[in-house]
Image 1 (tube, helix red, strand yellow):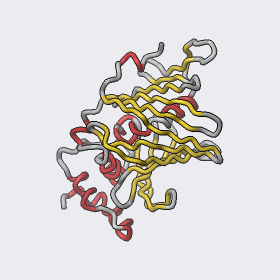
Image 2 (cartoon, helix red, strand yellow):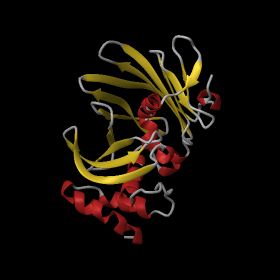
Image 3 (cartoon, one colour):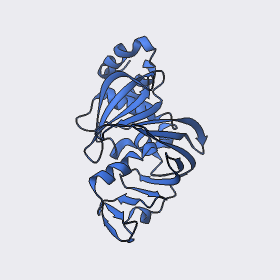
Image 4 (cartoon, rainbow, N blue to C red):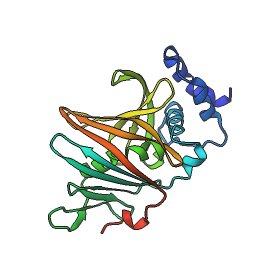
Length: 248
C-alpha cells in the first residue's frame, strides 16, 4: 500500500460493509502512470473514484487516446420520437444537434446557438449551455478533465434503489451536479442535475463493447413525470472534424 492510500482511507471505511473494491482504488491512486485527474478544490477520494470509473470504458492508455467522441441516439419522449447527436472534445469543446431543431455548441471563440426558425446564429444562453453539457454523458465519465472542474466525494447514498458512491462536481456552467458510481465496482450508473424544479435524474446502462471502448448504450432522463429514453445506435471516436464545433 503506497503513501497516497491514506487519502482514500475514508472511502474504504465508509463502504466496507458493501464490499467495495478497495484494491481497485488503491491501484488507481498509487499508480505512477495514472494521469492526475484532480482539479483544484477537489478531494483525493473523488478523483480516485472518477479514475476508477473511467477504467470501465477501457484501459487508461486507450481512454487517454480518445480526443473526440460522438454519440448518436434515438430518443423516445412523452409525445414524440427524435434524434440527438452530441459531439465532445477532450479540451472541452462540444456540440449538440437534435432533430427537434435545437443546435448549439461551446467553443473557446464563443458559445453559439442556431435559431430554429430563422436559421441565424446567436449567443448561447446559460440554461441552453447547461442542457448541452447535461447531454455529454459519455464524455463526462470518459473525458472528465474539462467537464468536472472540481470534485468532492460526498459519501455512500442510494440511487434508484442501489447503494452508490456519490461524487459532487462543478460543471463548466457553474452548476452543481452529482455523478454516481456502483459501490460494488465503481461502474458509472447515473447522474443528478440539481437546480431545475424538479431535479433531473439520469440513469445509464446496457453496456456493450463498441470498437476499442466499452460503452453504455442506453440512458433515461427523468424530470418529474416526464421520461426521455435514449437508445444510442452509433458512436464515433476521433473522427469529428474541428469545424463541427465552430459556429456556422
